[in-house]
Image (cartoon, rainbow, N blue to C red; front, side):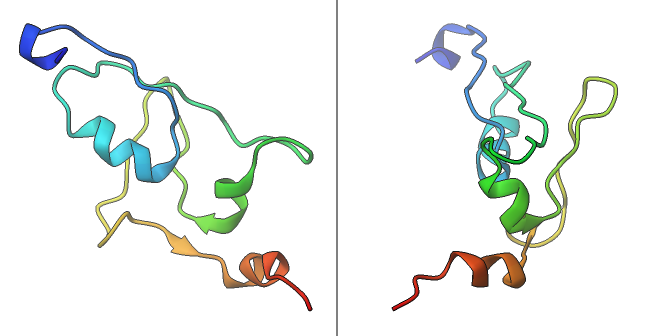
Length: 84
């Protein structure tokens, strides 16, 4: 709706899967960005995936690798598995 009226929007969330959507829209001049959070904070995606984009000079570049451009860290995934 905003794009139809040529209105800018600033989406919430900078996880890699969201950034591809944000970057594909012409009316999103900015996006919310949460740098890597220290222990105890929200760090699920930072820890689970390798290749998270890091902001530099106020800009974010996303990978041009296949898919979403990141790699699952299987050693971290193993720590999240349910144990019987």
